[in-house]
Amino acid sequence: PPPPLMRDTFLDALHIAGVSGHDLEASTSTSACFCASNKRRAAKRALRRVGRRLVCDGGAAAAHVAEHVRAGLRAAGEVAPGMFFEHLAEEDFRRFRASLGVSEEAFATSLSSMSGGVTQDSGKSGSLFWFSEDGRCILKSITAHEMANLLDMLPRYVDHVASASAEGTLSLLSRFFGAYRISGRGRSMWLVAMQNVFAGIAPSRIYDLKGTTEDRYVRPKPGKVMKDLNFEGHRVLLPDAAARALQLAVERDADFLRGERIMDYSLIVGIGLLSEGGWAGADRAGLAGPPLALQGRELVADEGEEADPQSVRLRIGIIDILVRWSGKKLAAYAFKKPTLGCFWEIDTEPPEYYQERFVHYVRSTFTSEDREDDDSDDAECGT
Image (tube, rainbow, N blue to C red; front, side):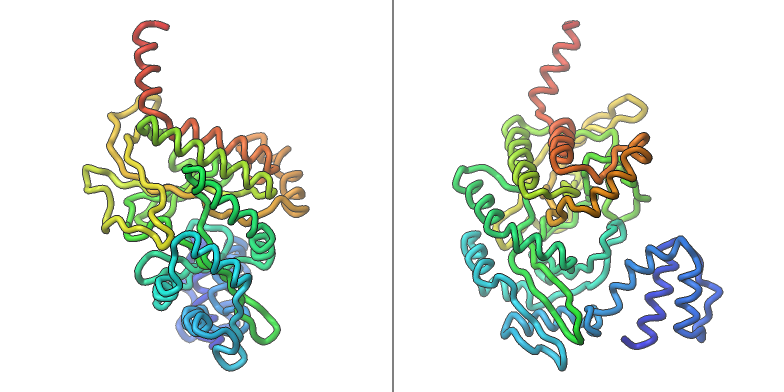
């Protein structure tokens, strides 16, 4: 990639790490910017993360990926000199889209105009995200291991989603519409197209919830995805039928993920206050129909005292479902459990424990209003 882009990326790494780069003048060489960022230990992790913005693993700038996808959807093969676009499990995904009621025309139209190609501030994976202009689709870069996991579990994933629909129950799992590979110069980038849980809306707050406490706080700022410790002290009361439907869907999906040896997934929750109109934008169904949308009351405890509940609207889904329990995760678990695990609820846990903890967290955080009222009556009666 051109040196100016590399230079800006190194400076971005410094910025994300909270390290000033004011001493690097505009005339500072690319190599000097790299050395300056690499010497600061706090910047090393950010440098690796932000550096993925540099290239599409074959020399194509991230900004050009959307162009390659548009061309590749029309005709797979060489989409630019030395750059090749490949559909993975094309027929399987085509059948899955049809089963969800997604027309090929609507899918192609949604992906015809994409913007983005940047990492998420609060994410650790370093994945790049592009968003369709109509807000219905997300294109995300994933690792080769995650792609292998997706393709391996695809038939069972499709059956799981289909059986939930046939039984009249919900599945909150990410809806994957397609999987792609862009390659060139001996390297590859792996992409998935997914439904956007927040199609057509801009929630005032978004939380990524795992039921863990290790490294689960971020400094709040507008537009930033917050985590478990940001949500600490919050509870959401839902109508009884909605609470039961949500909890059943989470139990069913978590059981499927456990069977696939998947862990490290999250509940993504968008919240808007009804007093402020709910959220910016008009509710719009995603390509595969509307995601789970609920109304309830949010309780926030401050120093043990709960404030008056606020009426809220919610959009909810389960994301990041492609990480399997592996030797690497086992090694991380062996290191963290007797150290960080003494003080925090760590995220790297075996699938069985991860499932149990995740389901318990959702049950205790998103509860029935009727149950809350019953508990209050019992307390008043001294029972």
